Length: 386
Image 1: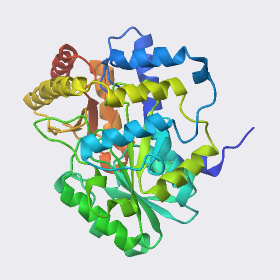
Image 2 (image 1 turned 90 degrees about the vertical axis):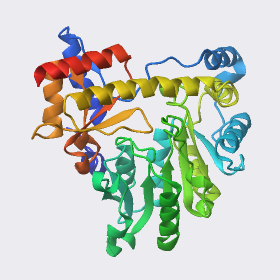
Image 3 (image 1 turned 90 degrees about the horizontal axis):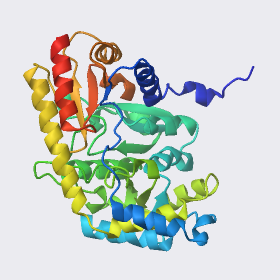
């Protein structure tokens, strides 16, 4: 009766919704599901953040529309956190924009700069909103394969000149979802120089910067010379502070890029609930010890999962960051079939790599978001199905 828009029809099914359907069906049948699919922390939000929310929520002043640009106190807290963490100076009035989770900012950003016929350079595999944002803006995503032979970094030299002439944006995400790959500052410098040469906007997704292991410490692209000319960086409290459901993040960097996104958002939403913004201030300015504890916990789980899978003869990464393990399928099969197989035979939810893009075919992703005992149980179930 009603026809969807061409843009909406051109979007692929959102991967996590499909996984959720299969998961709900299995649970409705009474099966004991071990969910290694969506990256949703299983640990609680630190109590001091909850207390800050509770206090602010009781204040009637918090119940009114929030400022589109975010509370000055939150923007100053983001400025201070970036200075302490990366030694990057930001202007809280022009170079910082709080978001209702970084996902919405990433998806909305292409609306500020892309037109019909433009290209957005997108890693493949990738976090799905990179592609969806370009499509909803009427532009086209050009896929840059992330391959193991290149340490899951895009080969910028292989992008055709004809595509570069029509491109306006390039997405970069390290530590990387879904592969767990990392990059160094030399790669960031290459991207910045490449962007300046070809007049590209660099969208840096840094959501996993605080989730790292083995002594590795991720950098911000904004630490690099020339970055402020071309980079907008997205960050989130979701993973760092176990606040996925709270929906709070930010964009920062080049003032023109940040303010363009602010203009888009002013026509779409009315800002983050004020009490949650106070909670964000508490998170950024409060005790940070839990981050170290979180990394130790995920490292133990990583070692358990990677060690167990390798004992089964599976080829898998040993990520130094994120809470994802990128696993080569041990059989001649496609990733959707294999993910379905282990759900049907072992009651384990994993994410098929092709759901993140065609270059993800041949892999599945598992998240370290269940207790270690459940990871050990997963290994035993996989051992039984061969």
